[in-house]
Amino acid sequence: MEDNRYKIIDGKAISELVKQEIAAEVTEIVAKGGKRPHLAAILVGHDGGSETYVAAKVKACEVCGFKSSLIRYEEDVTEEVLLNKVQDLNNDLDIDGFIVQLPLPKHISEQKVIETIDYRKDVDGFHPINVGRMSIGLPCYVSATPNGILELLKRYQIETSGRKCVILGRSNIVGKPMAMLMMQKAYPGDATVTVCHSRSKDLVKECQEADIIIAALGQPNFVTAEMVKDGAVVIDVGTTRLPSDKTKSGFKLTGDVLFEEVAPKCSYITPVPGGVGPMTIVSLMKNTLLAGKKEIYK
Ligand code: GUN
Image 1 (cartoon, protein in one colour):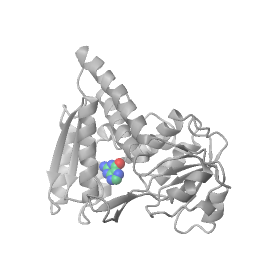
Image 2 (image 1 turned 60 degrees about the vertical axis):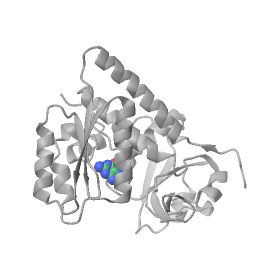
Image 3 (image 1 turned 180 degrees about the horizontal axis):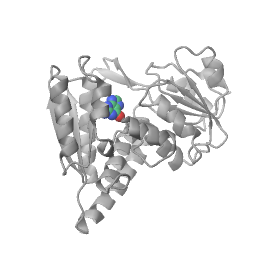
Image 4 (image 1 turned 45 degrees about the vertical axis):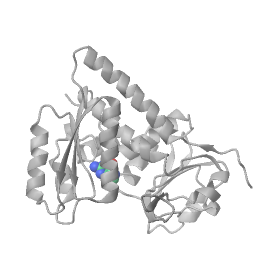
C-alpha cells in the first residue's frame, strides 16, 4: 500500500549542523590556547571519485576550523615510498590524524598501508586495533560511514532496540563494522542483525522481514519495493557513478536503493546524494577532533 508520509533523512542538513558544532568547539579550544586539529590526507592517482571525496574532506576541514594537508602521488608511486610517507606522518607531531584514500593502485597492498598507520592517528578507523576495539565496545576511532549512519539514526531518534536490521554487503569499511555496531549493547544498537551478501540464499526474504535495511553493496538500484516492508527504515550507502547526459559532470551518483518506488513504503529513507555521503565526511571530522583532543589515545 502506498504511504506518502515517509520522512527523508536529510544527511546534508545534519552534516552542516555537526560541522558547526565542531567549529564552535575548535574556536573554544584555540581561544584557550589549545592546538588546532590537523588532518592530513594522502591521495594516490586521479580516480574521479577519490578526487571528489578528498576535496570534500579538505573543504570540511576548513569549515570545522582544522588545519589540513593534502599529499599527492601519481598512480605509479611505489609501495615503499608510500609506506615511508605513512611513517613520516606517524612521527610528525603536528599531525593529529591522517588518512590514505582508498582504493590504492593494484601494486600497493592496502592492508600493509593500513597496518603501517599508527592506530592512534588512524582517524579512518581501518587499523586492526581500532576495528578490534570497536568490535568489543572499547573507545576507538570508528570508521566513518558506519558512524555517520549511527549519527543519523540518533538525530532522527529512530528506534533500533530489538529491531531486525538487515545489512546488505560485507565490506571491511561498511558492512562488517555496521553489523558490529548495530548489535552492540547501546543506542543505536541492540538490534538483531543479519548480514546478506552475494552468496546469501534468501536475501529478498530477509529484506522483507527487516525493520531496518542498510544497503551497502555498490549495486545501483538493487533494493526494490517488493523487498521492503511497510514502515521500514532504509539507509542507502550506495554511491555508484552512472554515466548521464543530464548532468554537467557527465555522471549521476546512484544509490543501491530504487528510491522512487521504495520511499513510499518507508518510515524513513536516506536519499542519494545528500544522505549518508555527507555524514561520512562529518564522521571523519569528528574523529579528527577526538584525535586533536587526544581523547581516545594519549
Ligand atoms: N574510500 C572510500 N571510502 C573511504 C574512506 O572512508 N576512507 C578512505 N581512506 N578511503 C575511502
